[in-house]
Length: 449
Image (cartoon, rainbow, N blue to C red):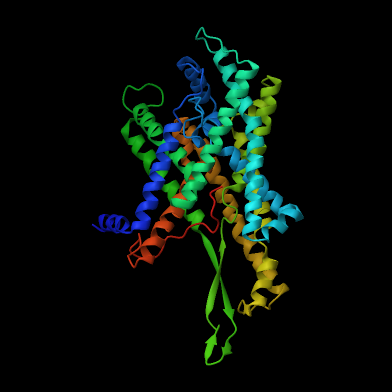
């Protein structure tokens, strides 16, 4: 079989084999760490936190990105999300602040400075999130009817905070090692592992709930098969969204240098349908977290707060969808710059057939980007709210999260990037790629978030 032959080719390439083994080793270390519980936490405390996490859709989302470490009160409970938050803030600073823009233009030295600032900001975020996590853990344990009471003193909170911060920084180090010595973008791969780790349990729970006599939510194995088919269809749609591009033809003028002719060939500018990636979903989720935080501080249950804290409700998903569409346009506008693209084409003696170089080219590219961003933003918004539709049709909360949202797009993007890395090694050593025809197209950016 072709698949077995491809695996043999992968194992034959020494460099690729070493990178795969290193990646598997580091992933194994990460998964073991997810089950190392914080000092002083008893099994009853973990049960109380797990019960709270299963009841809250937001906490289930955080638990998914941490690979289950959040609900296990693990030393890796905060996961890699603080680093991602810091990276997003630094990226935004690079788009707005002139000093960060200057660092971006400095090449490798500027990139190292920005990475250092990202690490500093990650530590600051961790020292804010770790005490909040411990306070939430204490509230859930004391609120559970288990006869136990948890009282974390000042110094206990301090050293547990240090442990949680060290755990997240260790995960970040593992991600960097996967990037340097393993396969693909390490941080994104860590997120992928955390998401996939939740899939078998969610799949098993959904399967059991569909068996005859399982009680509420039963529907037979036929319904379970329908769910799997729908999940496959949604995944195919996410792949199309990630890989969808509009090719703009570009012609380069012919140049004669000595006895050789340069240029004259037609190339293409790939304009991505979803140039913003998952960033609009992350921004929108950050905005939607505000009502949840206010509801937690107020402790009330007003109609307005309830409407915007129910992740399966109509108003929450309606506003969530609108925010995703708006942020898609916003993020695309600040990342895709038609004026710079037009200037680069003019500088390299390139032009779009039928369009004048310079300002007209910039306007043409901006028009194309606006037209393809509209369906891309709507499709992205639909993918983001698909878990709510899945819950409406009786799918369990854990399994419904795989029907869309950030988790699905991250899985699709990281898997495509990883396959592209493997295929590049195979092609480099004159082996066939992973596909019989065509090539795997990864994202234009190296990140999944």
